[in-house]
Image 1 (cartoon, rainbow, N blue to C red):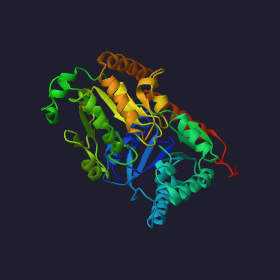
Image 2 (image 1 turned 90 degrees about the vertical axis):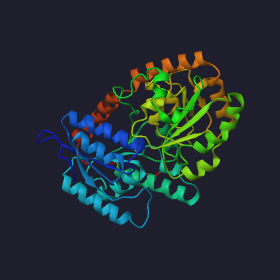
Image 3 (image 1 turned 135 degrees about the horizontal axis):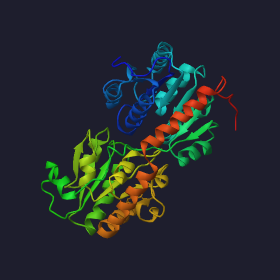
Image 4 (image 1 turned 90 degrees about the horizontal axis):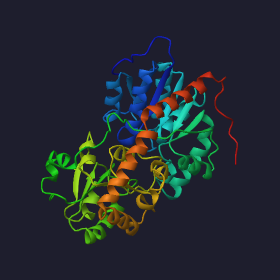
Length: 391
């Protein structure tokens, strides 16, 4: 345990159970924790140590518990469920909010409907695996939905994908948002580049494409690297920057042509967004990725793959320039090349993207909607989960 919460006595306690503890999930949870504490709720967070989430949550004033859980299901699951059950009892929480597949698995097994439980997948687990593993993951999601008072999706396409897969849940959809005080207009690009020593050898006027994300199969950087040779054939002075770290780094280093910059993990991506002409995220699956929202809030145009949440992130009409099929290096290269060749189009798209994001994707709007969802569940008579029905 770290810091005590600043909530007023008698307010309901919300327990967030989370694994993973870095990247977009950590930022979503930390933003919710900060907003909920400001609203006077008592907030506790249970997560593994070593990632950014524990520090962010503690810094916001939440009480943080060490929950030793790994990303994948395995022999440790029974102990993870037992530990989660103890944390729920000790916290005396009125509601459990479980984030991502592993925490959703452990929380629902631990609680089994005795406390209102919100499960937020942040992208479906069965999309991340293949074959027998995908069948098992889908089977669990169909079964486990009985123990969630709400299954909270971050985009309509994520919800529709779950429904189409046969998950009979009590659905809620609340779009992701970003901290617009933190991710403001990026400012002058030349100044941003001069502040980054890694870009010291980039000639003035050379276009820079930035990809922000964990280096893993989900984020599709391998597809981007396969597309990059075609981009260089059309725009020889273009530079590609991969911001992030992860298990795919060795493979990506082997795939990368000379000149691709790997920065490693960055605690603050704003300098890289400021230095970018264009931000790309070639994901294989998502719920609704934060990195494109952050880039658009900074006024940078984005190119995305047409996975869950992507169309809902973009302003109307931007899909013609900014959206490509997943797993398609040729289409990705064509979209990147077209935007790099047209500075005026990039400027216009970036300005429209910034206006749209600031109008519709403010994290305060997201947090308020989550607060309303909690209130509905806490005001409702128990039980707040449904009996399982087969479809």
